Length: 552
RNA sequence: GCGCCCGUAGCCCAAUUGGAUAGAGCAGCGGAUUCCGGUUCCGCAGGUUGUGCGUUCGAAUCGCGCCGGGCGCGCCA
Image (cartoon, rainbow, N blue to C red; front, side, top):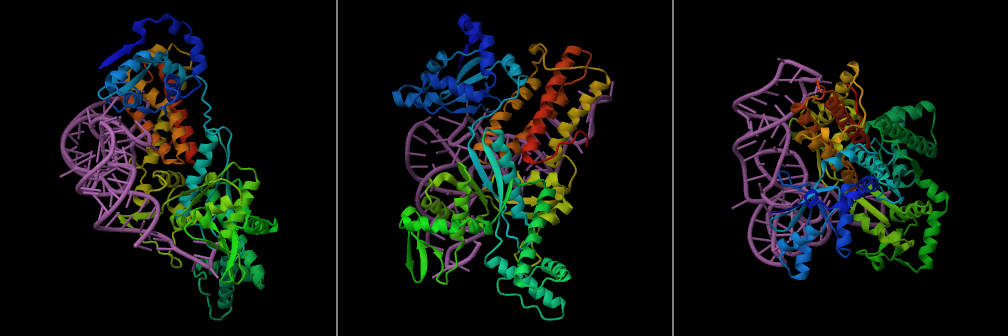
């Protein structure tokens, strides 16, 4: 193994401008800085910076030597040594070359600590791009179920993550307030009203059987509403209000609620049809109007107007996305359940048809949620009354736990929601584990204040040097990198896992070292350190929509 | 039949998106703590990454074929 220590080389020109360079670089994420350094040496290459596996020497690592060696037909290990010898930077304490050809960087403690206590970074991977995320958009024909709850948790967290990383992101909820489903709803309610009046209810095919319809019917009867159109209106408002209330209770608020009917009112359905006509993208077959989606990459052409002159959901969806783009968004993200997976392609073709690039729209499929109790999955049938709703879930499990649990898996993973674990208020429950770390820190800080100990971020940085301290410093500094990864991948769970690890690292630190001691200088430094830890936990939980109490 | 997702320790899941000796938690066994919050920490044990080929310096990750599980595939939304 080769080690190049920059200090030993005593390169005075490198070190002369240390202060200046430090000020200039300090606001950039470490991983990005290393990328920039290597980019100067290899402008053509896609530089990849990894974390060094635990128990290995160094903090960050690059595989660039493998690629260069392959290109130039050189030996990887020697190439790595040569590259390593060319890199000098004040933040790098030492560079080492390992086995096949990894180049590892160890960041200097001094630099890490100065960075930790400098101004918080503003991350800007989004560069002000305007993104709209549409999610939940549950039909106003029944209560919000648990699958939608997951979409709500993911969507809201994503909006926050994207805004935190330099995008301008907003959320939207789309309401299907017209069309077949709402007609069936209205008729189902009318039948139930009839039943309340002593007749036999005849729920239409595809209608709604749930008991919640009976509650609604009682209300409608009370108000004396009889006209079917008025019933439809009332029923839709009833559910929308219910959705708003429960989502608010869940901590999810949308920037905008938009109704399908408003798309019609703006004339966008006709505009879109005219646009298709103009581009010769439609034709009539079997009395229906078809969109030539095959020409845009779909498997088959799709019907947009049925032979009995009804508009299909696809046409409406395209018109709705036309509306979204009219509102000056650079990109659109939709969060859908797996049952809608087959529609992605058609809609993206629609996006092209109205004149935007295919990747303007990205659809995230968030997989289903299964409830688990006593080690067994609870069967969720779509039959009336058997649906597990968000409301029911929130009656049993605290909001914070539900949010956290729903963000513990990657979007594409099926999620088993363990009700027994969720109910436990012990360290087995990861939400409390993370919150407890924060509360414990706050308790220590209160204790210090009672003793009249003042602390701030300006202390001699070489006081912090124990292994447990430095490990904590490093993991806190990774926070911004984690936010980038989570935002780039649209995966809040990356942040969830990070917070558990951060809490674990703190608990370990706490177990090994005392914060408040006889050594006043050290006490002040450690108070500053744990205070940064608490701030990071709080900031992370906030992005997940989970609260962060001072005491528990 | 076709499309998408998934398969990793007894259980539930990670693995920096192609990197180094595959890691946490739970369950099991054994320890720590006069103390700033014991809702904490440490150790032990646990693996042919469903399976077979292939791609390359390097594969849990990529490609093809099987096996197993889930969800879709309307002139419904």
